[in-house]
Length: 179
Image (cartoon, rainbow, N blue to C red; front, side):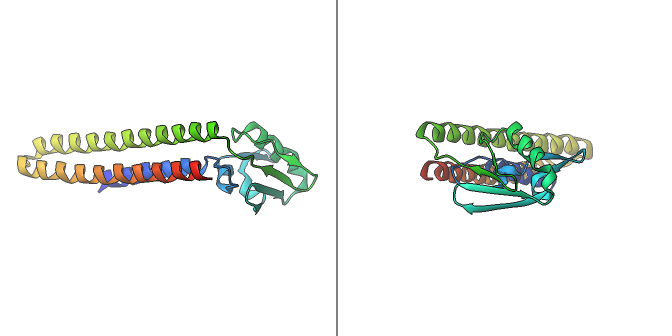
């Protein structure tokens, strides 16, 4: 059903946002949204060089074209990842500092806020689906029982996705607090 597809997209979007949250460990997904000016075209970092994780708290980026090393460095500095890159002329290194307790708590608050936003999106999808079926039901003469049955199905899906969102929030929060 169309509303379930939308709910699934909301959950996927939340998980994508969680992948970009820095948890003290090197995760190459924090670079997913960063674009490098590659000969005038904004290009994802993963498409201009080799991204590797040689140690638990370090990401190395080795551009295939050494002439764009400065552009990659500028893109990293301009991004909001909060890590200053080091450039040795061939490779750019991002060293992740240990998270302080205060920073962990801030990240968990941010995670919960993102989870609440995802829940609101799912609830809005539920409302829209129910409104649409009520309107269509009046136009097409669908019985009240059928409308009620559809509303129950939508509510069950909504409850299931809310539970999945809660689980994702709890998982990510635990990951942040136990790193």
